[in-house]
Image (tube, rainbow, N blue to C red; front, side, top):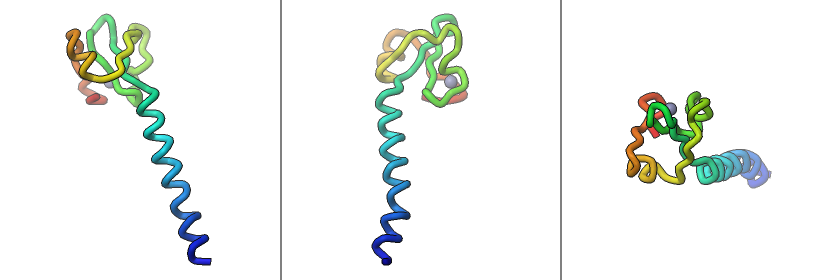
Length: 74
Ligand SMILES: [Zn+2]
């Protein structure tokens, strides 16, 4: 019975972690063409009108002259 309780407690945590890592892997960074600032997936500006440049890593963004957003700090 105790084992079952443990499983019930752990399962949501494990699936949440899995979901987070999958989301992070799938969602890259969006760069704003106008301001040359790039955003995290959880930033409100991630899907802004001019945020159409997509980067796999933050290094890619920095290499071509983008700056990390001050709000989401990617
Ligand atoms: Zn941002």
